[in-house]
Image (cartoon, rainbow, N blue to C red; front, side):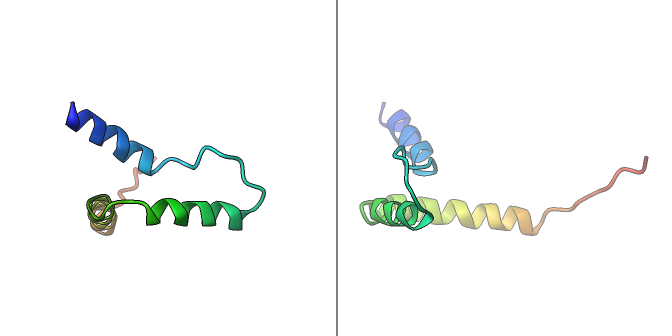
Length: 67
């Protein structure tokens, strides 16, 4: 049960805040407030996930099909 709760929390980390904001600045401010409340473990997992994605994209090869 604990693993499913962690999976749900991890999926929620990347979703937009549910409230409607009038400006980009208000949205950015809300995201910063949410980030401040994250635990160190959540921040670490997000950071390592971003590093893995960056590495994957850096090593990606684009192959074009000849028509």
